[in-house]
Every structure is written in C-alpha cells, then in structure tokens.
Length: 475
Ligand code: URP
Ligand code: ZN
Ligand code: ZN
Image (cartoon, rainbow, N blue to C red; front, side):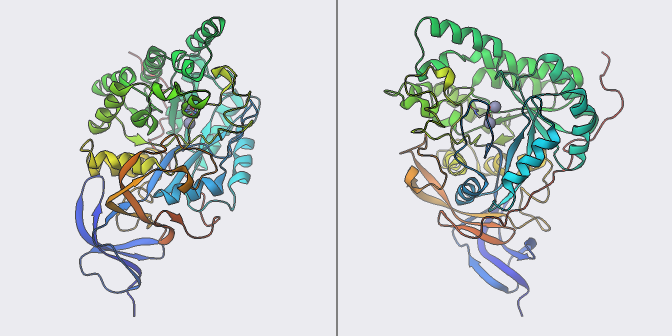
C-alpha cells in the first residue's frame, strides 16, 4: 500500500535558505513529507542529479489586458500559463486593469471572465488603479482587499493611467489602513512628454529614441519621489521593473534608512541594452519597454543588486505584443514615432532560465535565485506559505532542474503567441525538466502537459498588518 500519491526521490532540495538531499512525499496535491528513505509512492520520480526547487512565482505579467491605444495582448490565460509552466513557473499574478471611469469591481469581474477555465497553473490578480475616486478608495478597494485582491499597481506615467502625487498619497494611505501592497511604476511623466516632443520636433523618432526620451534621471527622480511619498504615509511600497544603477541607489539608500521599500527587476535589464533598440529598420521595437534597457554597466548594477539583496522580486513583466502585427508593435506601421509603439517585451517562459544562468556564471547563488523567483514574491503578495517554498503543508508546486543543461533560446521552441523573443540566440546553462502544480505534471522537458483550465484562482492574504488608526505619523 503506497504511503504517498507521489514521491520525488534522490534529488537536492533547495529553498531560499537551505539545500539538502531529501525525498519529497506528495499527497492530495500538497507536500506531505520531506526526508530520506520515504515510504512508497503510488508514483515515483527519480530526481538524481536534479535540483528540486519551488515552482516559480511570476508576480508581474500582462495577459489579455485591454489597452486604450488599440493594441492587443497576444497571450491570454491559456497560452500565457502554458508558456509559464513550460519555463518552470507554477503561479502567475497578472493585472486586472481599471480603465478611467470604470468601477474597479467591474474590472475584476471582467478579468475573472477572461481567466475562468483557461489557466494551466494557479493565478492571483493584482489590480491596476487608474481612477482612485472616493467610491473606489472608500468602498470598492476595502471590499476587494477583503476578498483577496491585496496588491495594486499605480503608474506615475502613461496619460491614461498616471496618478498625481496627491492621488498617490491617497492610495498609499488606503494601503496602510487596509494592509495592502502598492507597486509603483516610477517614471516622471512630464519629463518624458517634454523630451518626446523635443525629439519629434528634431525628427528623431526611431525605436532607439524611446530610450533617449526616458533617460535614467527620469526613473531616478520618480523612484525618489515614490519612496518619499511612502515614507510620508509610513507604508511599504514595491518599485517595479527597476532598470539601472541610479534607481538602485535610491532604493538602497531608502532600505539603509530602514524604510520598507521593496524592489523588482526583470530579465530585460540583465540581458538587453539600448544597443538592441538601435537594430536596423524597425527591429529595435522588439525591445522597447519602459523603463528602457540601459547599458552593460547598468546590467552589472542590476546583477549586483540581486546579489546584495536589494531586489526581492524577479518577474518577467511579460507584455506580449507581436512584432509583425498591426495590433502589436506595428500599431501605426514601421515608420511611426517610438511614441506609438506598445511598450513591453515577452518573457514568461524564459524568465527562470535567464536568471538561473547567472548561477553558472557565478553572479548569484541558488538561494538568491529561489528567493527572488518564488519565496519572496509569494510572501510579499500574500501567497505564502501555500506557494513559494518546499515545506510540509505547502502546495506541491515544484520544478525539477537540470543544472548542467546548456541550451539556446529559440522562439520556435517557446509556447507563447508572440512572434519573437528578445532573447533569441542566447545560450544559457540550466533548464527546467519537470514542473508540478499541486502534485500534477504540467510540463515535461519544456513541453506543456495537462489540461488548461485546471489552474485555480488564488485569493491573497493581506501582505502587511492593517493599520486603521493614525493614517499619517507626525514628525
Ligand atoms: O514596458 C512595459 N513595462 N510594459 C508593460 C507595462 C508596464 O508598465 O509594466
Ligand atoms: Zn510598469
Ligand atoms: Zn508590466
């Protein structure tokens, strides 16, 4: 008689703090035991020579997200989740976007309709707040937070989404009262607008000029301001998609002062640079994202920030716009100003392997890899201990890695619906060979397995204690 539904034997288990030889016993979709010489499983997997890691938590991706410019996300919940699973990820957290004038509750209902019955792996939602009316802040958000939507992103740029400083303060105060986490897209909108106008007047409109319109001070100033506003309200914040040294310095200084400032970075800031935006013709559009990729020295600053614990979260920021598509990067044709090119790059499937490659290159250690790709995002967004680690009682979301496998990224072999990857031709070491979601195989040797639709919606806990009293501390 089998003691477990499944036993993974002889692997090396690694968490954000430990690394040990152990079998993993799985029953009812959860981890039931860790130890050597566990009893029999109904099924057994030999993990000799493999690392047994928590499945990845991709805490920043855009799937089937409506836009006001007419661009269309190539990936919805089926292709996005299948692609994520093939890359070793077992939880995704995309965004339910509130359009201006729209009720937030209606945006969440709409997003559930988009996701329902489609995902291969489990998913939660962040909210995007673009219209923080008294009704949204006073009634809708507290109710939604209670229901498990406990993190939200706000923008300091993009005309249809940006909040002014007063609105940001109001959202932060609400987050403090309710114990929610605010993610901030930190770029100075007026500077970008002014520089864009200057560039266009000079006829400088190629994809490369996107980077010129968003130089590092644009991000540095907004990061500083976001941190300052969070300090005034005395609430934690997370700065998303940090691109380079100057923003890292702001975050490092704030963390050194004891402020609860968290930070996220993404593969594009480790592997892409503004040189990629200079590629001939319109090719550079493939790598347009905001903030833009910087240069090799800034890539080094991001690796160093990962190594030094400045970043807690490593996400893909998967923004799936096809290249050869009038609903994608070529929204206004190939001669259009960079201003009209949809921002973002795809990366759900390649996120983990690109960071894992940093281990074989001696840039980060395995514990840091597990921390920023699974454990810390699960903790920061209220999914821990169900997700994000390998421990008794957690969901059996596990990825087996071959740490020696050398392979070259080719878009033809990926499972998203985007017609390119910005990482085409990059050779990396380390590959996920088997991914389990709640004990069920969802990917084997880079090929998805299982029924899209089995993934469940995950309500999130409040990441921090609610502090309904004393909205602002007096100096
Ligand atoms: O360029 C980016 N990052 N596009 C995706 C949307 C966002 O701001 O995260
Ligand atoms: Zn953003
Ligand atoms: Zn994003």
